[in-house]
Image 1 (cartoon, rainbow, N blue to C red):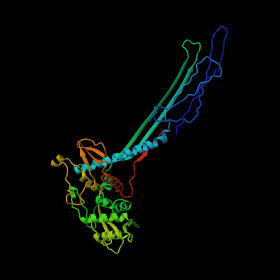
Image 2: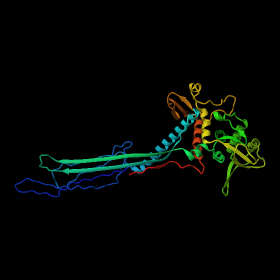
Image 3: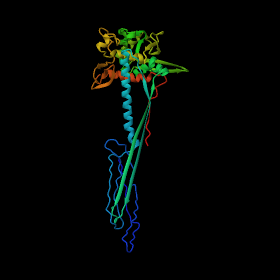
Image 4: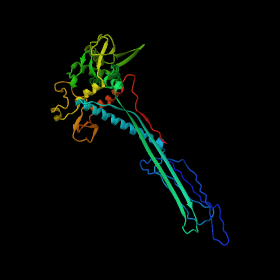
Length: 413
């Protein structure tokens, strides 16, 4: 919504005196100002170079030798400073924080492939302060008989400033342990699956073992070939979840919290067959449909599902296997090797990170490291999906709910 304001300036003779024997004439003019509508100020954004003060006209009540004055200053796109900045700032800062998070995470994944130390820096707050000031002045001095002629002065000035303050917090100490080094809780994994995440993808990315059945690992420190049963369990759980027959229940008994995985039978024959297959492969009691969810590599009772999960650092280490390392770096021993996917189903990288000497023109995320560019192709939907879940699990890694998001404060004056 745009509004304008006008300033009416009228010059009225307050005194007219004619003396005999002299030709002196003196006029006193009174300047009035009247605001016709609300004043709108606008930072010098698109299409605007200042603000407007249209002056409508100059009137005189009595005939006086004075040239009529008509001055108009137009403003394109006058807007309020406070409300007009919300959409621009919110979207702008959100996009910048999101892009910086992707680049930081991608860089740390590449560093892990080179056994370099990852560094995590969180944006804790964003404060952007605006100020806008204007000043308009008009001065008139009329002496019709004076040799210097008539004088009329008009001045308009404006000042606009923006002072953003961004606070960063290094991820260290207890926050580093909780966010990056502690295994992701098993109930978080199954709650994510129940919320619509692909079970086969999430289990392969986050889980090391389930009831003693181990997942493949391409990490140099714990390379392990795939157990075919793990893929069968993951794919069966995906089909069960898609049929709406998989759920999670959480019970609280005093200070103790128990989590259970639920199977709903009698949905259809195929789903019942998948549920039976999961129970058989995991060694569960086939008469039950509710199993306690615990953390560990192997179950201790037939009514338990034991899940050994990875930490966020471990997940990133697995994703580092998808980094395309130059052959020269591999020959010189600068980067670690990974388990080959040949003749080993399930060893394919979850995310592919390309590398080259120049910055790619079309990349989902790209970073510069060791005088080379590493990036994820914007057309690689599988890698982009992995990145999306990586951000979600990073937010859920800390106990006690979601961590506090960056606070954005934008005072406007």
